[in-house]
Length: 318
Image (cartoon, rainbow, N blue to C red; front, side, top):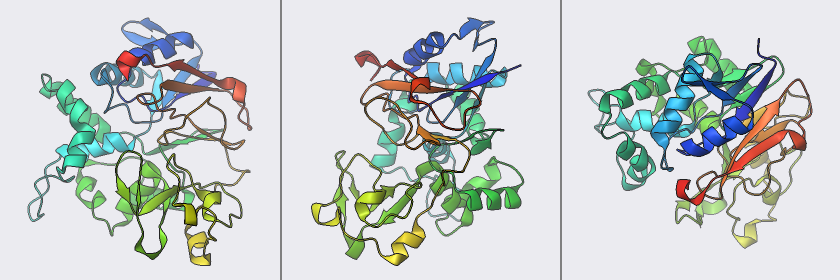
């Protein structure tokens, strides 16, 4: 009987660091599978891409899930890999669901390279990725890769009767005017606002963007700076500009009375701690700034700084 849960953020191919983190938390390998006598892991998605030990990470995670020692939700990188390699149905103008642009190819490059000699195995992983839960609700906490939007999640359950995709839904999921696309964009990538007057900004990674990521827990925000949630700053003249009423209506609010929520996705830096008392992001930029982070959840309703744990990612795995 599991008495507690250990939530682990975005791994991104840091398979050796994952082993270190599991062992640090008291998990041991028995019968080829990492396990704990009283606890269970919940992975927050984004196992693949970027790091040098993607295949190892996939093996560890899937074996734990299959044996009942872990749960997982889908990350945007698993979804991207699936759609990048799924052929488009007849009548679509592109050969694959996710276009093979230089940017999209660069994102999955390490995953494709590391599985190049294991095509059958990779095909089985892609099938598995397709079936991963998009969100999970436990008795006293919730997990999703990027954003918990209750109305969208309820509508998804009403339409599709569960919390997973199927292969047959993938073509609809890339149609930008569909509910399914909008729902996946929200829960896998988070909330955002468009920059005003058709403006754009160049991020540190060189990408030009017309949107910026927003908090979905800001109560009564007034200015752009109140809702900004990304490493890149806004253009200086916009930081303290007032949000319009229309922009405020687009924002989502996950209130302090809601169950504790765990997310990944957002490339946090510094020492892990709660964002607000009931929300924790566990993506501490393993392949960039160098922490693979976890939270050791029991039955608390207010998240505690002392219950985060992490392992520094050695440079060879970044």
